[in-house]
Amino acid sequence: MARDAVEKAVALLGARQPKGEKATVILDPGMVGLIAHEAVGHTVEADFVLSGSIAKGRLGEKVASDLVTLVDSGLSDHAPNAAGTTYVDDEGVLGQRTILIERGVLRSYLHNRETAMLFGVESTGNARAFEYTDEPIIRMRNTYVEPLDYGFEEMVREVRHGYLLRGPRSGQADANGEFMFGAQEAYLIERGEIRELLRGVSISGRAFDVLSTVDAVGRDFSYEIGAGYCGKWQPAKVDGGGPHIRCVAIVGGVN
Image 1 (cartoon, rainbow, N blue to C red):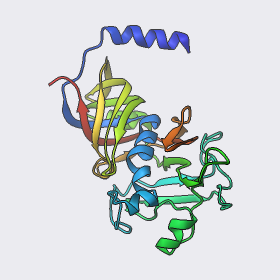
Image 2: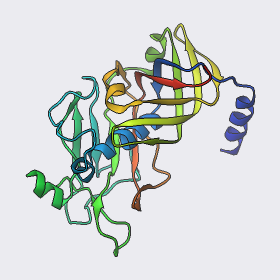
Image 3: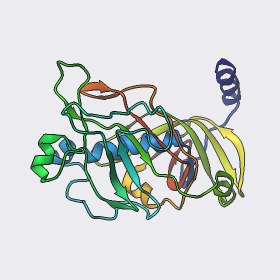
Image 4: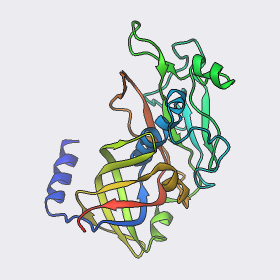
């Protein structure tokens, strides 16, 4: 790990910044997991929906590409040891798999028993508390995009001009689904080939708009954001990930 960090740091010293533009991007599972959690997941937590998030009143609407199925699960689906695995929530509800977006259509919010009663549905098992003295509130668990059938090399080969972004850094998202996240590594793609390493690269957009441009979803899968905590008033272990995906977003850099 130390050797990899040193090699990456040295390579970044000589890397240039990209030109700011709207472009095709390939996102690795870490970037996908961060968008799934921060830019989509929080907007469909029912307490935030009641407060007026972008997802309010949009169940049954098309909010993403037909290729996008986005899930929040208390189970460690597709890969072992997901950090947000919660077999039973803190209101005694089994931690089932909840499909939030199914083939591009918004299907569900995340509920505890209280909001489930208000919406006339069953709890999704998302009531979680950090300590026994804390009130259970609606929290995500393992939030991810379902894999499909694209190979990574094929995904890259079809890009005339774009970027490969790997490794999420800090950023922010709001109740409107607008987000901006930094990437630890970014590579220019030209004529189907991965070329030079770039530095100081960020990605931004509105989550539903960006997910609507997805035209390739990989067959690979991993969880990548489970090292830290989600901090919605109290800490909670969560995870997020998915396959590589290809979409269109605003790439930040020097104009």
